[in-house]
Length: 391
Image (cartoon, rainbow, N blue to C red; front, side, top):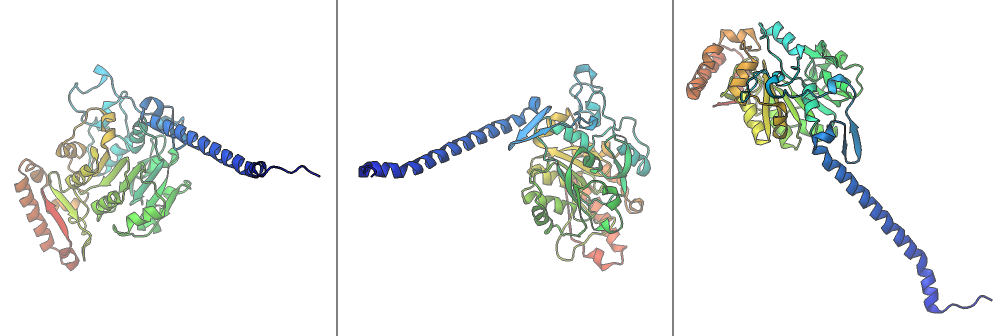
C-alpha cells in the first residue's frame, strides 16, 4: 500500500499544477508586455527623419520605402544652389528643390485651359509631397478621392501624362483607397481598372452621410490623402470629414477661383440649397484656409483652382514658401482662370483682384455681381441657393 501523505503535503501536491499554470501565465504576460514596449519604442523612432528614409516601424508593422524613383524624396537646395535668394519665398514649390522637381501634367493642364504657362511653373504633385512627408512619419498608404471621375490630366508612376486626376499617380505607388463619384456610371471606371486596391463607390452621398461611410469602409483616421472635387458643397464635405476625426496628411480641394482672397464664400448644405453652376457653387480659397487653419493645416500651393494643404508639422519640410493666400492665388492662377468662360460675361476678375487690399469694397462688388447673376436666371432653384459670403 502507498504511504499516506500528511494533509499539508497532500494540499501542496494538489496546488502544484495550479501554481505552475499561474507561473506560465505570468511569464507569458511579461513576454507580451516586453514585446509591446519594444513596438512602442520602434514606433517612437518613426518621427525621426534619419530612420524614415530607410524603414519605418509602427505598431509592429515594418514599412520600407519602395525602390521606385517616384518614391525618392526630393532634396531641398543647399545654400547658393537655391535659385531664389535666401530669406525670400520660392515663387513655386518645385524651385526649392535641387534639381528642381518638374511635374509636367500641371503645365499640360494649364496650357489647355489657361495659357500661357510661366516658364518656371513647377508645382509639387501628390507623389512628391508624400515622399517628402514620409521622411518624417510613416504612411498609411490610404487615400480618399471624393469626386474621382476624371475629366482632366493626371500622371503615372513615371510622371507621364495620362487621363486622370491628382490621385492617379498614387495607385502604382502601392496605395489603397476609396473613390467616390456618382458619375462612375459612364466614366472613371476605365481609369481605375488594373488597381484592385482602388475601390469604387458610385453613390451620391450627402455631406452629412459621407463621414459615416468612411467609418463603414474602415478608412484609417490618419489617411495620407483626401481629395475633394464635387462642384457643390466642397467645404461642407471637408469640414464634416475633419469634425468626424479624420486627419489627412495632405488635402487637395477644388475651389471657386472667381472668389479670390480675402473673399470667403461657401455654398451651404441647408434646406433647399443646391449648387448653381457656375456662380453659386463650391467654396473659395480663403474659406478653405480659414476652415483648415483650425485643424492645423498650412496652404502649400494653389494650382489654377486647387488648394493643396499639409499638416502644420510638415510645412517646414518644403522650404521657404509664400504663406499669404492672395499671393499664392495669383502665382498659382497667373492668367485668372475662372473655370467657365461664361463667367467673364458677369464679372471682371482683374478689377475684383485689384480690390483685394480693400476687403469691404471687394465684398460689395462681388455681392452686386451675385445679385445681377441671380436676377438674370429663371430657375427658382437658383434663387433658393443658400450660401455665405464675407471677408
